[in-house]
Amino acid sequence: MRPETRALVLHLGVIAGLAALYPLLPTYHQGNLTRILVLAIYATGYNVLFGYTGLLSLGHAMFFGAGMYGLGLPMQHLGLPALPAFVLGTACAATLAAAVAALALRTAGVAFMIVTLMFSQAAFLTILYFTTWTRGEEGFVLARGARRIAGLDFSTPDVRFWTAFALFATALLLTLWMARSRFGHVLVAIRENEERTRMLGYDVQSHKFRAVVISGAFAGASGAAYGLFFGYVGATFASVQYSIFPLLWVLLGGAGTILGPLVGTAFMFYLINWAQDLTSAYMLVAGVVLVLLTLFARAGIVGEIRKRWLGWLP
Amino acid sequence: MEFGPHLVLAILEGAVGAAVLALTALGLSLVFGVMRVVNVAHGEFFMLGAVMAWFVAAAIGGHPAVGFIAALVIAPLVAGVIAMAADWLVLKRVNYDPEATIVATIGLLYIMQQSALMLYGPEARPVEAPFNSRIALPWVEWGEAGLQLYYPWGFGTTSYKLFVIVAAVVLLLAFWAFLSRTRFGLVMRATQLDRETALAFGIPVETVYALVFGLGAALAALAAVLIVPIQQAHYLMGGDPLLLSFIVVIIGGLGSIRGTIVAALLIGMSDGVISVFFSPTLAKILATLLVALVLVFRPQGLYGKTAT
Image (cartoon, rainbow over all chains, first blue to last red; front, side, top):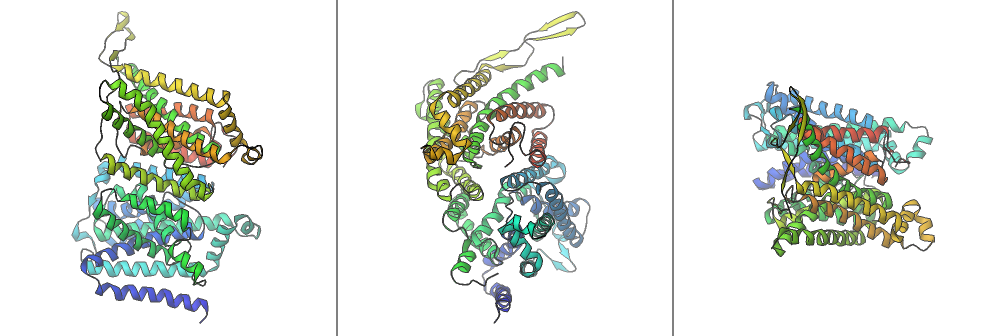
């Protein structure tokens, strides 16, 4: 088999595996798998920017939050139906990403990280500032009756899972397609050597811009889906912690690999779940994992597998 | 007698904030200037200082002044040693690569913060000030009957707050003297200017890095010991000083000590004034947006020379 076909078969296999796994799991883990898939969309979007383009953002929570509030606020205050609200949420995140990209991409390296961090912090504080509508840290619950699209009721776990599954599968195949397209190759070229890519005549700035917008739209879709599925919108999801999470997931799973974000999200989800049972200081685990990853496994799980055994993994 | 007195109070509160901020941000600026390392865990060293101050005060007991003086010595030492260990165990091993150090210090942030949650608990605990007498301020105003003196007029400050301002100024001057008059200060500046040449002249750059990282953390801890009798010690208290120090260091110009001090005064004062008249959240929104725009349009800050 050609490497391209092999990769396609592998990824379709993973998707089929997820579908086959679901009915076998106990109810508790079924719920976890749904959450993991929704968050893996977020990680996949983060990976487009960090893994493929080589831009480390510390402010993705603002896109996740824009998706969530872009869906939640109109549903809560204007009675907007769920489907247009979902589209609106994703569009909000993409628009915010475009605005942030226009400014932040004028900087590079450490300055880019700090600028994204600062914008994200300003967005988080803005949510707190308009407490009257957003209910601040406390958040608000989306009414059960409103959380349905064309007969699909998102308060039932099965509907939630299969919708999350469909969204994640779309995200995964989209990134796979992107990574193999001309556009994806230019992104990798920018990551490896920005100067040379510019010299070869590629418009580096516009490629980076599109990468930020795509990444932000994925994060927004994930945030909107999270709000819609689990019926809660709160400022925590726009806080710094939610900017660090996708970085952690992608680093753990393997930056610049298609399957890395899913693997990292699943691992970290269960690791943090396990730590939560032990202590209220569960974020300690996240800290230790971050330090260990930078010290010993810079490529992450899937990245190490690719390095050692499967060189053809996209 | 409405706006004026409130402004005076706001400026006074702002000055206390600015004094502590200047010390904290100086630590961050020093580490960035010499090592080119963005220490995201800086706020946690601040928190560590405050928590240590509580532990020391609780362990020693007796007059609050005794515990306070002990904390002034012990807290920066502990923070410094922990920072040096972190430098040696983690930062040195990733060769101070900018991205890796940021990720690693985010990890350190969570490790320190969550350890504090486990060992110290989720409560906010007060530390008693060594002395704390109220000082009523006089207010002079041009009224209907000519110049009128209001004293006391209901508001005032405490002697401890004034002490914090004075102490911060003394510490900043001492630090400046240390940097410009001592041999170690010279070695540090040489390393900052040119790491390779410093190495060629036999300066043990790795040791200098470890000491600078420790010194930066110690400055944050020292600032926290000063402020903890006014605020309270809490395991999440590191977030705000980190954010504000970032803002100050960037607006002042990355790595410029003079810029850091000027920006700390500017940001600390305006934060205090805006917080009193509008809302603290609004003040922070404006400051964060300002810093993002400064980085985008004037990356060298107020006093910096080169963009990074």
